[in-house]
Length: 262
Image (cartoon, rainbow, N blue to C red; front, side):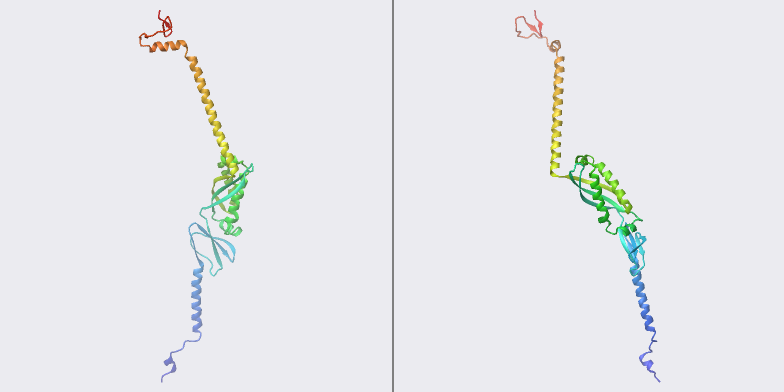
């Protein structure tokens, strides 16, 4: 006798399908969890881990790391290599001359301080902290010097500005490596005044040189006139005489080298 089940195939128990579905779902969840928990941090970078927007204090270094999946943890990546920021800044000198310059700052975020930067400032720390600090420090430092001193004391100004900027940014975990003042630009009227002053100084130096040269020449001529006495000239002439009598001797009683011939 042939049973119906032998013809159409034996049906699986009703509870088998949910188990398969749940197993597949778990497998998919594991795969998604693994993918969302794996984070790769590049060279010279730090990843700040947050949990539901709160900074955990955990910083991920270079390489592959794992965090809580499904958006429980998020990672914000910061570059800790030396960065370069060029800022065009304007200020007023001690004698109220307008001056502008391009300031170039080399800096980097310090390891161990990136979470604090993320928590207190955020990823826009350059626009919010670094650039305003450069402008303010340049204005304050320039106000301590006259326009002429800004040109002659540039190295001193740079040293003061760099130290001030270092002290200002250090509490934020930002380390200053080098500050450079590329160039100073003044108003057209002041630049013209500087040029005229340089021309006047050059003319004064030239006149001074000519005066000293004339004075030296006069002193030389005075010394020569004192040295070339009549007796000295006679001696020089006798030493150069070849022993031949001149063919013409004028003035009555003849003389040679002012020596009487008779």
